[in-house]
Image (tube, rainbow, N blue to C red; front, side, top):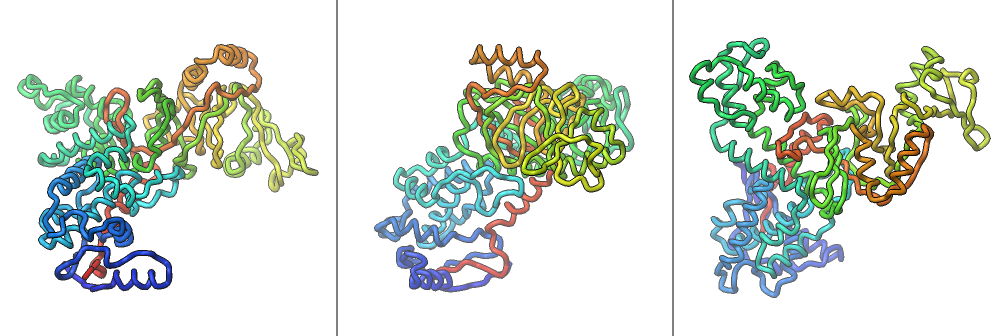
Length: 538
């Protein structure tokens, strides 16, 4: 392991910034260090700017020791329990200097490490890790907290753990995912199971030497119960009970629920516990980027999980399958409000869909327009007007737009929930309801299709008899009608590939947009010192 030293480098930088009025800090505020403050490759670099800002608030150069450099064991223990709390939520203890908090012999160095761990921990729990950045499809604002303010408050309260708990997400979905992380971490402490190997397919009634190991794996993951009788009388028989257990596993992992162990099912069974832990960690991190107050009633939509939850007073009152954007047209993560309901909507085709999907069909057969009840508008002399499709040069159509009339074949189905956002994303029905039977459903151009959307509508207008009456008559009329909802409902679209469903079952889905892998890479490398740079302090 290489070690490099840059004595006084940070102090020199800080003094220069102070001299030019860029930063108002006092280098003398930090505690005295007997020798050199050395860090080696792979450790987390202290946040010196925040450290100076914290120590400036104190009359003493020590925050964790008295003037005789005796440790404040009660306060230090409070931080150590907070580190345990953060670790249980998927944050690595190495980010908080881990064993050095207890093993460091130099009181000045230890004080600095403790303070840096405090600032970093409260920041990570309260708004997510700085090094994680935000993924390319994330448009929700992160919680706004000042980690130095929070650190100072924790020191005054003498309870770092309590402050961390206040800052952490309190949503039931997050807490359930934390519990799941604990279960998988406990499993990972046992020996990692071996790789299951199979040539061909394993179907009901087959005999295979794979069966005992398969049964053991499913018991470990909670999809099967121990079956001593089967193990004694027919250990190699792929019996019906085990088939049902495989179906449970398939359902939880976005696989076809056919009970057949083939390449896809085998690949998911062979995911290591460490791989699952890192997947859960990425999803816990996203939850920490979320607003802390989601509302008494809100809707959570997961583009990666293909589900929608209506949450009321902390309980999931409706759970529905969804269809979301395919990888080339992904559904982003953002926050909005459901504000109005359209019954029997028409559909103004987004430009990209028109250009890439529909124009080739029209050029091939102009009758496609009439067959799909699509009319053409041309922008001319400052306004849009309907025109005969035959008047358009479809090789160079100019400034046109396509509008599909309401009806059974309309791409939006019978219902559309509008919500303000710059991405032209909304929740809607679909005539292609057979797609909801697919285990993975990345079929849209970005919008969210909701199975049983009528149930969601009924739930959201239940408090307004007048709107219920309007809704029934609007459905029967068959014409486009729009009305504002009795109460707007917050909607959070969040990329979640691991979660716990309302039945308490762990759910995992493929990283359809590649965002988990990118986030995991940033988390693994973020903040760590490479071999060419080591923080040093005199």
